[in-house]
Image 1 (cartoon, rainbow, N blue to C red):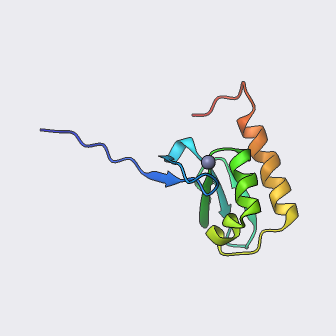
Image 2 (image 1 turned 45 degrees about the vertical axis):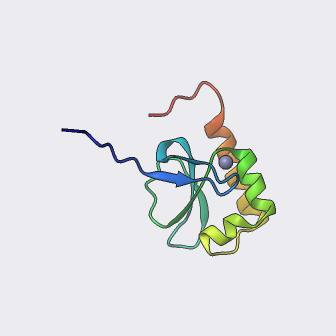
Length: 96
Ligand SMILES: [Zn+2]
């Protein structure tokens, strides 16, 4: 009997790399219409995935994030999410 593990694949909106869900950072548009970084991946709402701050910056230039979330993303939103992403990427912080 073969064991097939089904892994949920997600695509980065910056570089279009496909990775397992946990390997990417999730950005979510909440029910209130707020764009936020979602470190737990559990916030309900429309989500988009990026590998890194670089990929988010790339998605900003091409407006892919706005397309993925189907809403307007302001400069403030980008700055806030970039900051939170940078913190999440900082070395020395282990994630489960
Ligand atoms: Zn990427």
